[in-house]
Amino acid sequence: MSFWIGIDVGGTNIVCGIVNEKGEVMDSMKKPTEASLGTSSVLDKMAQMTVELAARAGLSDQISGIGIGIPGLVDPWSGVATYSANLNWRDVPLSAELSKRTSLPVYIDNDVRMYVYGEAVYGAGQGVDYVLGLTVGTGIASAMVNRGHLHYGHLNLAGEIGHGPMDGESALCGCGFEGCLEASASASGMVREAKRYINEGKETILAEWFPEEQLQHLSAADISKAMDAGDAVATEIMNHAGVLLGKALVPAVHILSPEVIIIGGGGANAGERLLTPLRQTMMSRLLPDYRQHVSIRTASLGDDAGVIGSAMQAKQRHELNQS
Image (cartoon, rainbow, N blue to C red; front, side, top):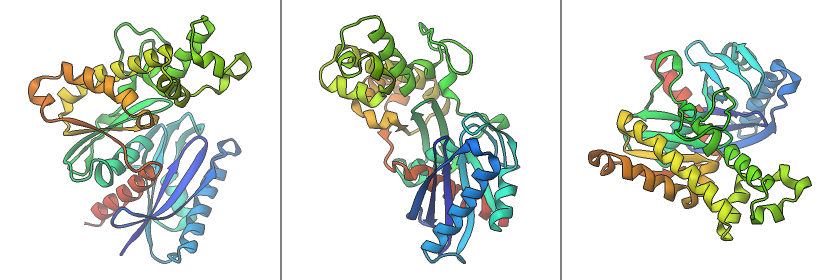
């Protein structure tokens, strides 16, 4: 049996795991990214985690390769991290540098693609040929898996559904445009809306839970709790986000024709609070032939999705290179 290292790199933490050829995580560890210490420091830490984890599992001589999912723009084929704002990286030859440090083949890709690949092939989409995955967290992004293979598009840029313009929306997005899906329906967008309502003096239990000096600690999870408590503002924010997501998915379904749509990230944690308005809106606007053959599921692998996706995508690409 072969074993692969999967690494999920975030702005806050690095999660590293050993995955067997069945897509099962054998062992994993998490350490702070500390990107402020520089690129070499982050690379050294990834190499150290790989060695430490393999030794701990007694598999030091049985690791076949490494897969890495990183935020931002990536050229998977050259192994270069083109741009990552979260890590302050620009044109980092990640595959080559980590391969030097570990003497193993290294394959990189975008973190959302790796998350969706893990869920599509080994998680909530297992056994389904055509899977569209959507991550709803600080931002919103997507990826499509067709019969076990990712869709990349020209320049590997496919998937930025979060930057589609939504009618009637005007919130400024981090990309510089106004009215993007991500600006209103992401976890950070919902938090921004909640803070706006509170600052406008709208009656909401969130204002009691988070007085002025505590408002910075408000999260999307708190909006879910307030909704469960019957708070009208929280319910309005969550419903509005769900409706926007449902509207955005209609053209995606019509263009890509997935069998299953997997919702992951913080959106999965919100559960039916978010998925009910999403599903109702999407289904009401789909053509009948699409409506009858598409379903929505929540992600099932949790934090393991990115690790499994990175490891198994590395395995797939390595085997293709060897054939």
